[in-house]
Image (cartoon, rainbow, N blue to C red):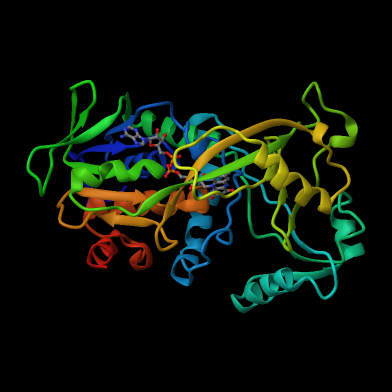
Length: 390
Ligand SMILES: Cc1cc2nc3c(=O)[nH]c(=O)nc-3n(C[C@H](O)[C@H](O)[C@H](O)COP(=O)(O)OP(=O)(O)OC[C@H]3O[C@@H](n4cnc5c(N)ncnc54)[C@H](O)[C@@H]3O)c2cc1C
């Protein structure tokens, strides 16, 4: 426990997604247990409950400053995989399988070879496999795959279970949840002392964390400046797993994640949950969270190029949710400009599950001691002032 922890702090966290729940958990670890997570729907009802669950830093902007924080978050995930199930009894499915980034036509695998060169430049283990070598790693791969970059550096989790487990562990230490919609702050403008809910109640707080995912811009009026985070719609299709009643032996899980690097499209294998087929990215759908035909049209042909084991009938489940997409590709994490006690943890785009432990730790450090033990300069919310000036 951090001796500098201000144990009397009451913290209100707006948003019960993985970022809010990881923050609640990390606060409990530094001795701050008077924490209220305010959620207007259900815990993990947004993207945190419906993500693909891969812990990769390579699906978004690949910004070097953000990439440099990846290893620290992965290390925290490995620690969570050990400690959370002991506290909560929830296995959140942490697992590490090979990842094959596949190319199809020579010399058409520029993207997968470039990916390998970049990882090697970062000092990470990556190996080039011929098509037949790749099929030895995963027998789902079609003969059309002529080469693949193989890595084993990106674990997977079930992000809904992880979010629930983080919150349950925080609750064990005293954190509470409040179901309600936050609509503003109360108290002095530069140091608010509570969060107002739409039913007229107030959650009193010495520190306030905004972890509202794609809905963060609701807080623009509360702060008096814009937080440039927009919703990006994302849909996934799921295959039933062998233990599901509807399953059949031919549709056992693949032994590796397979990625069509030429066109996009991924078949993601996970220990606990169904195999995922993904994913769409649409920037112009606002807050639309309806599943659509477009997901079938986009995803199916791309994953079918990877394997002939997937047909329309393999798909038993379909979800749509919203990524919190930041204007410059990097999340906003840290103290809100011109507020003494408001913190922003938002805009994690397609990598929020991966960066949740790092974010939770940085925010809990800031609340407890005024400083983050990790250098979060690259993602510091202080840069919101630069957007204001633009
Ligand atoms: C299809 C898809 C696949 C993905 N796959 C991956 C992946 O493999 N790996 C990865 O790392 N990331 C992945 N992501 C991204 C990841 O899911 C998100 O970055 C992450 O879940 C964001 O977490 P969050 O807590 O910020 O937001 P959310 O999960 O959206 O949670 C925000 C919460 O705040 C609540 N809220 C908002 N406003 C208010 C208010 N005013 N009052 C009360 N409550 C409020 C909402 O109800 C919501 O529950 C994926 C996303 C999508 C869409």
